[in-house]
Amino acid sequence: MERQIKLLKLLYHDITEELNQFVKQSNIQNGQLTIATTHTTCSLFFEECMHDTNFFGDEFLHVDINNTLEKIVPRMTSENQYNSPGPKHVEFGLGLSDPNYPAEKWVMLNTDAHIKSSLFGHFSLVLIIKDGLPLLGQLGKIYFVDWDALRERIRNVNFMLMGC
Image (tube, helix red, strand yellow):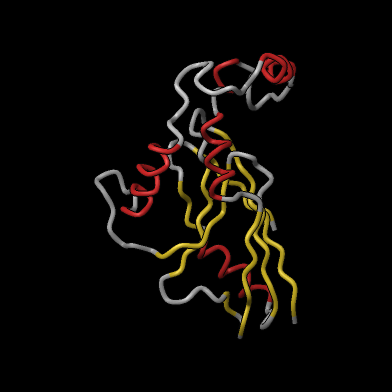
C-alpha cells in the first residue's frame, strides 16, 4: 500500500492509525511491517505521544526536536550557507521536468533538510506484528516527517506487510 501525503507547512504526520488499519485489514496476526519512503529529505521515526501541543497544534516534543536541530543544522536561508547545492547540482535540478514542481533555483536551498534526514534516519522502519497489532506500546506513535518545508508537495509512504 502507498500513502500519499500532501504537505503544506506541517512537518510531522502521525501515520499510526493508518498503519493499524492496514494491519487489521490484512488479517495477518504475526509478522513484520515495513514502512518506507524514498524521499531524501524525509524521516520515519518511532516516538512517544506527548499529548501537549502549542497554540499551532505542534506537539511539544516536536517543537523541542525542531529547536534542537535548529541549533545543530540551521534552516538554509540563502545560497552558499552550506557547500551544497553546488553549480552542477543546480544545473541538473533546473533541467528536470516535473509538471508538479517547476524548476526554480530557490527550491534547491534545502541542504538543511538533507542533513536533518541523514541525522534522523530516513529510509525505513520495521515493526513486529504480534496478535494482529504492531508492537508500539501504549504511547508509541509512528511519525513521517518532511524536513524540507520550502513548498507544498506530495510525498509517498509505502507499507509492506509479511506474515501469517
